Image 1 (tube, one colour):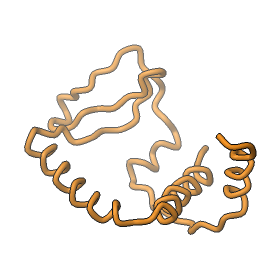
Image 2: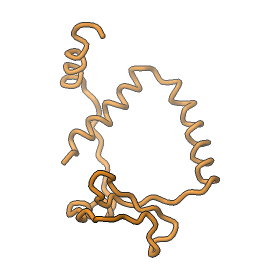
Image 3: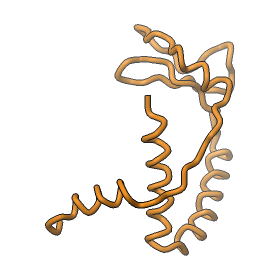
Image 4: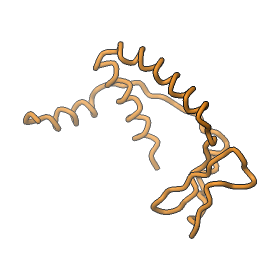
Length: 113
């Protein structure tokens, strides 16, 4: 890397204007303010919630939430959507992509606990 590269990135992070976004939390996400205590064992398939996979932090075993259990058709449909999205994304410039990523970065920095 060129000399001053990291300083340039730091300067850009501090002074480049990027949009600020607000994302409303779902009721389930808002319950995370009082996280569930980690457990000794985890079961990713909950009989009370068929069709969903329970997600845990592997390092702490803290419950993170759930995701839909997908079959091959579901995965294929998401891949088709991603391929379509890539057609637009590849038409953007490096500066536009960086702006998107910086906006996401700013959101994460301002909303970290």
